[in-house]
Length: 241
Ligand SMILES: [Zn+2]
Ligand SMILES: [Zn+2]
Image (tube, rainbow, N blue to C red; front, side):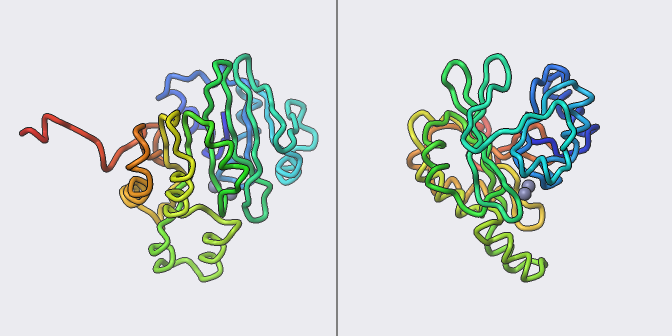
């Protein structure tokens, strides 16, 4: 499991909807200490009997000093996280946190990435994402909505700064560079409830990649685990009618 920021009850209910038994989870990797990523990680690892892994700064900020099931990783160190999966943490810029994107690699060579909470994509990250079959990446805010919205100016600057979050436009631009024939699916995640809307995120990304990308593009909903599509969802019978 990558990150564990909902309440334990909510996470267990989401896992249940996905037919995942939490006791089958080997490892929880926490990308950074912000509570929307870490809140229930420690309690979940105790309750489910799984390992907890993070980098040293995240463990320090979460005061995990005496935790026995904790393993500390370094940037770009490949971690064996179960019998058939390894994880590669790639550092990304995020204010006041040592955050990482995570590339999961299966024994069959297939790779999936989870990329959230970063002010900009780095060249290093792009080169790893170009080898992935699946990418979950944040499309956090629509620039105009953020600027016109009710956040104080200091917060607007922080969200849109180098250590903030990716806007829909930034995500579209990054994906334009990343898309390759082996990329089968993209999920947009970590959408701001105040400064974004699913159809805006999806249309901005589609505009950037529609000519080069043939896979599926979906949105991860806050109240998921289901994904949704807003545009591009074809329903031939309805079109005929
Ligand atoms: Zn976050
Ligand atoms: Zn964060």
